[in-house]
Length: 416
Image (cartoon, rainbow, N blue to C red; front, side, top):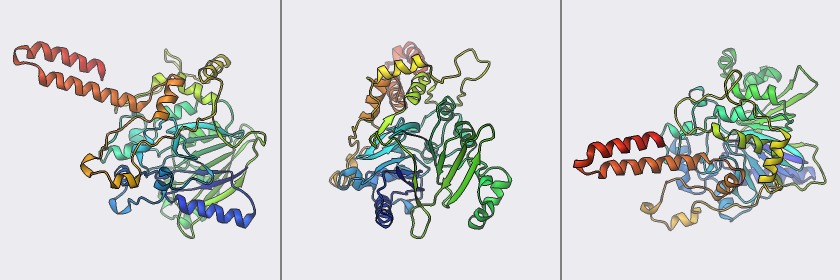
């Protein structure tokens, strides 16, 4: 299978697809799959730009909106993860992944899928220690602070990957794994990015959680972006004969190394389509109780605790989940628009435009089938409960203030 790997997309889908077409004609081959390593910028219309964590002068609509509206169709199956410059309001609708446009699939906050026998995992966002142990508390409309914390990876996502037992062919992150510079041309890297030297000397270049996952999962390939340069490394794994081939690419700009074609063995008898990964579905289901929507610190279970802390699924658990999925692991082609297209937005008065979050039918269907919670739905439920409690307090009569407030206060405590 021919796979095109893209660094930071920054919304330039037309240019990326044009570049792929150029390489196809030049090399006489057909690309089967495109993988984008973050900063995808799935902005459906100009309103989505408000959720993009970037100065206003850098907020450009670019070309994704054409694929969302149906004006254009992605010519190659496209898979991507989130980075630190995203339309987070849209991606937050799809925490477990889903179609953002026909033929363009988001892996979610973290996920594993299968494409023609190739197992692909990925984690969205970047690492910031201050938010790593928090729940997924952000929701639109974002504050300037939550606009950034929303794309910070969380310990739950990393914990879930640490339950994976089966081998992974390709892993995708936006951040580089910490310490990856040791496995490539370190001196050439510093010529390109001399300011990396301080972070390298302090062991701060890259993500510690991604470093953990690199040595634990030992994928055949690891693709990343974020640093806006090309870097290649070979990581040997000491306890066996496996190696990980690391590739980071630049952002989509002229004369930059932002795209590379690789060949990966696949099952030629299987169609090139996306399937859910059964082991990952099991892990999602059996760790659902660990979801938090609070901004306070939350820690994962571990050795010595009085609850289950290893969630690598048993055969019985896998059979149970496969039955819940109706025996069919194909990802349904159920894309449905959840916001106006850019053209539709032009005909909508600004006063009538809503920034309130909505639930995506893809996520609703997936959660109902698998028996798990949508973090955004939990946030909206919490907000509605708080609003109801506040209205109860405000509407109570003076003669009943003490008893009513007491009842309402306990109601709030039980819901939060």
